[in-house]
Length: 108
Image 1 (spheres, rainbow, N blue to C red):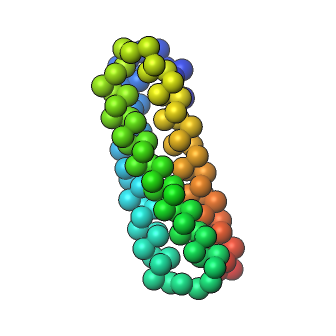
Image 2 (image 1 turned 120 degrees about the horizontal axis):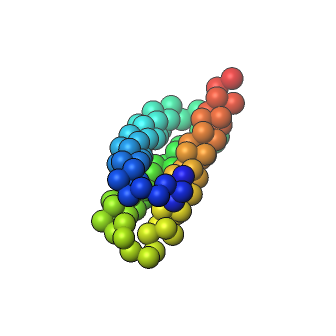
Image 3 (image 1 turned 45 degrees about the horizontal axis):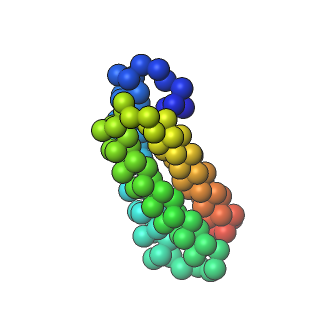
């Protein structure tokens, strides 16, 4: 996604948007972990809160990588960093969705 954009200004705008989104999703994941910790139903909820905690960590790493990528956009390795940001963001989002599915399956 980020690597396919050719205009540096557009790449910067997309990175700022991704930084904001990743920070928000990290906060949501941490809040959901707190909600699940207070409602210890069974072992599947502990799996879900571990998954949410891991996705929150992934979103925080994305925030750091975006910050460093914005500083080094002209460097030769910037393409690899943008690919890593995309993959980590997608993996964290997928993990968050899977945790939601585990919670829904547990409570239904």
